[in-house]
Length: 340
Image (tube, rainbow, N blue to C red; front, top):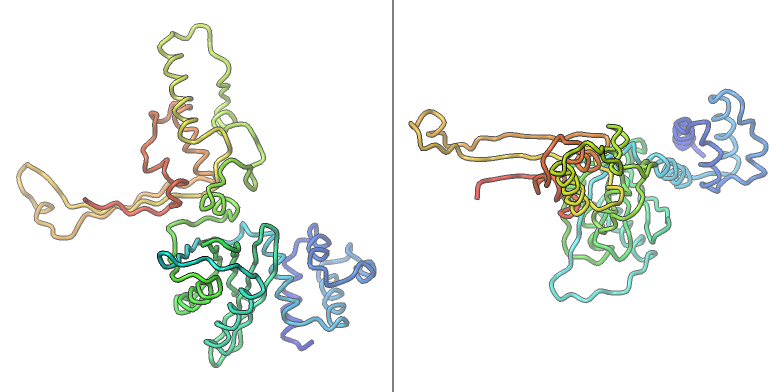
């Protein structure tokens, strides 16, 4: 194992929290139980990392072994990445061939390696017929940069791929070509959908809303947790009209959002472009050729649950604007609004 690979191992192991070290290493399944039992996991982290690197050297670990370890670490810490969604399509009337994951991997790797001399590609199969792909890009004259990789998650026999990266725009067409050809599609486009929560993005594009999402560990609606409301208790002094209105708001909110936890997104962004219109005296703005532009961004640690809580909390009227409630159905959290 040369110094470059040893350093890659050292940096990868160093970023794994001590509390997760054993779990990640067992998931990696490169070092045996006997090897791991020889390591003192209670010593200083620098010393622990050095011992683990030496074990990897003894077992003649390769660059691909280190890349697999990095994939596993990233799977544990997927929320540290920002994920974009790409959607592929076939030609109208095109038959769907039987999918073979090994053939997909081989084709994907060959396409990248034929187009770019210095690139490393690693794969790790997971549950739900998904494959995690790690790509370290180089150039014709530089070796791949192992510390700025691209991660791709592809679910077999679906038109969706999820990409997290500091991807150079110059490499994006090549990645798109590899995905479309290997998965036997014709075209690929980037959706207006982005989040740190990979499982929530998957739920949105696969229409799997009625499930529990990562880090959403409470069944209590957000409006009850944050504002101390109890929707089942009605003050005996409340007048009939208010009680009817409250029931209407709860009914409308449930019809729109359902009674299950919402997919987790951190923001929704709206870009408005419109011409100035006025029947009054024509002024400077009326003569303006360029449209007026405005950007509005809604941010929250859990945006859809926050929107769901607005009307029951009395902060907004029910129903909310379709521009806010259509996010999961449209599979978008970037919107452009223009004059018709």
